View 1 (cartoon, rainbow, N blue to C red):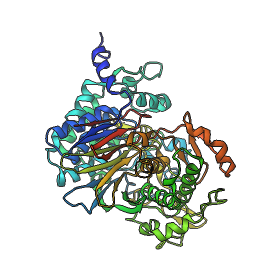
View 2: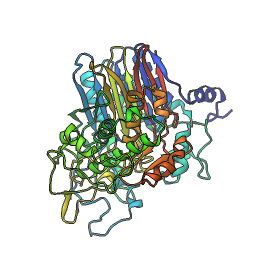
View 3: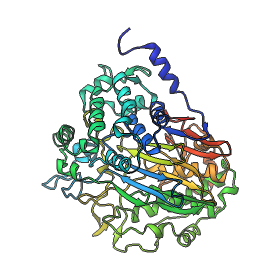
View 4: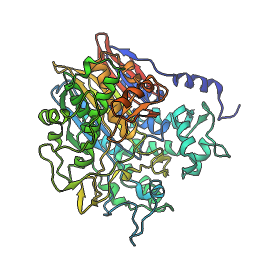
Length: 562
């Protein structure tokens, strides 16, 4: 028996990777994209920790067991609701940011020549200043209960002792494993012929275990100065594809932001999400409000009429996101106007039951700028979501990312660095500014959309979010519809066949009943494309029996509760 293959351990851990059924609990639930991460959060709650403590433990474990989607080298958004302040939803922004060096685009060299995008997206040039750890550390310092250092033990144990190769990591390695720039991690996860090691193989990450110990000891300062900070800068600036511009001063200067959560009425509920620089929150709330105004709750959830209405509302919402959304610390963003009920009624009036809108353009919400042009679509196909309710009723809904699979493909200290700067747009088009253009210290817009929904009495009833890049708002909105409009349990809401249209082409999820909607959608003017959709939803919902958690069976998630 080799150290890499321990059948008893592998069998035990692989049992955790079976598709998760909803987990009911009177008091506490943790759900995330991996059972080891969910168990890490639950262990912290069992030790007397609160939802913030558990979120730290879950994120650190995800950095180990889902390294292609999120981690120490990435950014995150977090919503927090506390029953001690029931009218307030707090929103925390730990998104990766542009280094201080100014640039028109990460694709351009100093001499004006342009590098191929495929080269730049997997390079040091694409790495933003990571913010997830800083955000969690600042929030923990204010609201955490257990010592910071106590929250890292599950992640360190998984990194040192190993965990079985899960399906989603295996899939990511099949897709981009050959591009990983860390020889040690490539050798750990892949064989000599460049194939991912078989499912269930015990894999480790000793380098990340050492990094986690440093962060446990020094907090976010471990990423701002010292050996880990130097390792990050060395990896970014020495990359051969396109050296990055980040400096230790950028790492030291990074600070998370606390923002006002974006809340709006929809489906008879108050739904809160992230404000800009998230466009995901705006798009999700717009879809739900406009679809709700057209009576989607009364339509069968698997009907062509419901799919058509959802897709048309999505087209309108996604058109707004390209023109109006950017970092509000740098740009005038009409956030309130974009979810204004009067504005959304005007937008929704374009939707017809018998045909698609011929051409959808961005609207004119109150407070919009007149001197801007649409930004370019961004990337982010991976990402991860976690949702937690603790025994005191606090709720965390957090979405976290390193952007593409394994981010920039560059590792430092055993974790992968994001390529979030690929989410910025070109500076100008036709002589006018793009709101999502690059600027020193700025954060690019993002599709991440953690949400918390409240009933008419102000009680939280649902917290949900998703992975999946540009499709995240569609996934989240459809899950919200399932629970709030169609009366589904949260597991069934997540399992619904997906629909999506980012104001381009309508998509229906492959290998699901949604494929059968194609002819009916074509008759209405859609040109549907059958598309695989790995949504990675995770969430919790209140029921008469208590909170229920569920994780999307399309990925490796699990819910764990009392």
